[in-house]
Length: 425
Image (tube, rainbow, N blue to C red; front, side, top):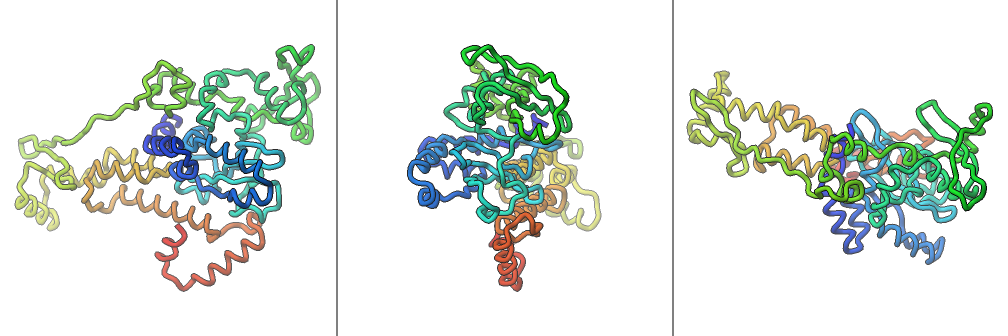
């Protein structure tokens, strides 16, 4: 799963565009390139919280590498998609939090994320209904800035093998509990262990030991700080490298430079498969892209027209024409197209299709067209969610937003569905 995620979830074109935008200080452009919607207004933040907070927030946004954040976001099996319905804290400003959110599973088409400022207020302050608008304890990155800050990505190697004691000390200090105390580690869906940091004094490196008491209750566990998942698990990139399943050039450039400084930063480019060779009537013919269309180049156009008419009447077609038809219906590149669409990379999927069938080809009915249609419907679903026009359970939204949604539906009910989908996306 992680090999597919690393191959398709954050495409090279996204990484290059984000790096170019960050280089000129355009953090909003980098977020747009990484498919991250920005749900915060700096002017409104300045009005409510002052210039000092806005200056800190803007500095953190300029340090943000949204493609690196997408690379390290929690994912779920079996496809490695973003874990839905998360609110992940990136930075803490007292009672405020800079957070990134993933949409609920019903609106996960396009694999988009959103950036917002959580103020700890009631639900109506959140612009979109979300199942878990409050930052969670298990998934938090404010203690692991190297997973989203381009300037600190070099810390990944040192933090990858850090023990629980060092990570727990950071956690306890961030929670205002001092450098010593008890904390909880989540080892599985139903397995929790309690550990304690101890030492003769604050000048010594703390050690970690089990708490020799009866298992605490659920209420007691919830009262103790929880060690985030990013501090408990070994980074999948490190495991892939150790197992020889990827090369440094196949990782994000910042990740590859941190985990394998001597490795090659270049990504592998597959060899071209144009033209295809097909045995046809005792000869070897070529199928290649000509004038933007996949065609049998060793047959003259008049013969191809006659053969196409013969096939339309139910007769057997040329092996070259059958091979072209097979590319449309059962192409070898179908898994690559499907994975790209699943992770929201519509541009990359289109590039694969153009390289396979040509820029002027008319896509026939078959699995390729069905995958494109399904991906478009998923993206429409996300657009409806962002526009508060999907069927959201009322307890996920505040009453005012729910009423506005109903009123908006009444106003546009008479419009054609195509116009509705275009407007919402």
